[in-house]
Length: 277
Image 1 (spheres, rainbow, N blue to C red):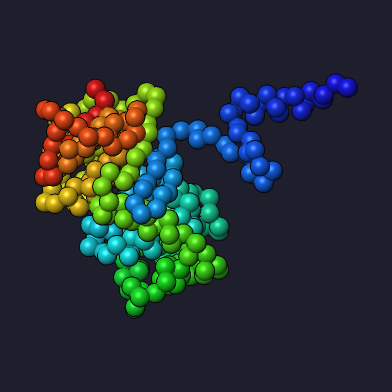
Image 2: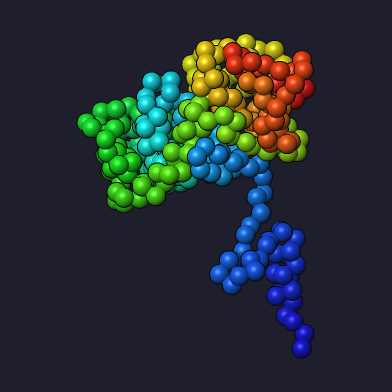
């Protein structure tokens, strides 16, 4: 008996996409990653795509710049994971937009403002800071005080993932953010340096020395890893080729942190980021 053409087409399509069928009946299908991938390892593991990783890094940077504790970063990341999966959405419920699905009609700002990740994060932290006793609350309770969601307990399921991300992005873990960026760089040369430096300065509020990339002087390893992880998180859109700090080096195609020796070594006082030329 001949198989229907439609079934054959589906099978061919699945094979072309590289779908892997689990050997166990309950395993289901696993879709391949169709773009750059980031893995964060810091007493746990979280995998995000490049867009999600960049947004997570910006949320963390804004919190640190505002001198908010790590717990606030955890709450903010859990909220954004629940509300938008860390994607800067423009099609939320009613008039909700952005990473935190804030609503212009509820006084969060204009739709254009809320879709600026930095603005949205600033507004979230400002609201969280006004919540009495938020530091002692469960993640979901602190988030709910700000968001007033119809699903008040939904944020808690992201607490563990957010803690992993926060440990890495606040600089408490070494070489914890690893992103692989393949294919043609988004930018090169002066354009890449400008994009990288502009994003860094907007998120962190400090200037970076510009050459064939940027350099940042740091006071301690923790602040160095904050910046190094931020840089890797934003690699896809900025044309970043490599980051060096504390005798370790990350490169875009390889996506891993490796020991670096010889003239390429840098110590614990400078983060060096180089773009594709």
